[in-house]
Length: 336
Image 1: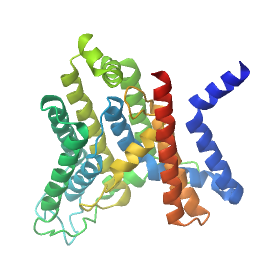
Image 2: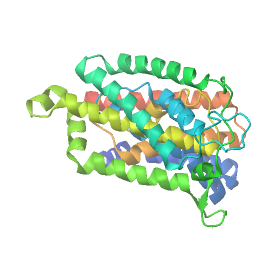
Image 3: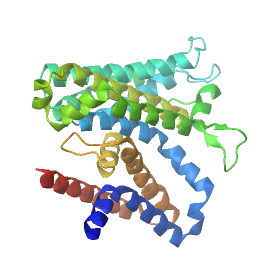
């Protein structure tokens, strides 16, 4: 019995055990890794990725896949950045545009992401196109549209820079004086978003319907759930989260290009899968997704910190992803 309980504990908490072991292993190599400054840097660098991964989790829990998230990040980063340059910047995207309230381009970026999500949801639910193919198509379309916008005169595909301080402060500023214990605004935003997503997952009808659709879509239909309408809502929320992630990424880095967000969709899916979101649908938690993001954040930052080659980092990340999916499939087959 004790062995069974121990196995159950490790099965249910494997993701957190792996995270602790990763941190401990890197700290043994260099104890400075446990400093508050390092922790803050990891959280700051991965806040936008956490928001994007939470958006991807919505779709994955329904049993779908969203490949458009990275290009939506690039689109919304370019849109928001192009409207928030300083008035004296020599290569301003809109030379004659008056200074807008900082919230206006932010909302435009989020709305653009939501619109792409709505389109994805409509294609998947109304046209019955498999999510992989539907979002692959929109990924290409969004990148093309963003590149056309990015190439407009007078910008002509130049990196968008010279962003206003009231915008970049959102991505780089802190509460209180800048010190080891100050909390970045972007981390606070990510925490608030994670809490809202947790509420949706666990306390709303949409969340219950989402898990039901992922568990068995046919049974969900029989039980009276409007699967098509719920899928549109879910993809729209996911798109809005990608949009917010793109806006915050522009604020954090102080610029944008049409290649922003490249491969972010794979990082988001990988973080979700490592964090316990089932590839078969119907299973996933917010803490698990956040832990998955942190695992890859620790790998990227920590292994670089102790001088491990980036190529070895890729191998380690790949092994973790394969192991996580294999573990997930074993659990799924055991349930069946």
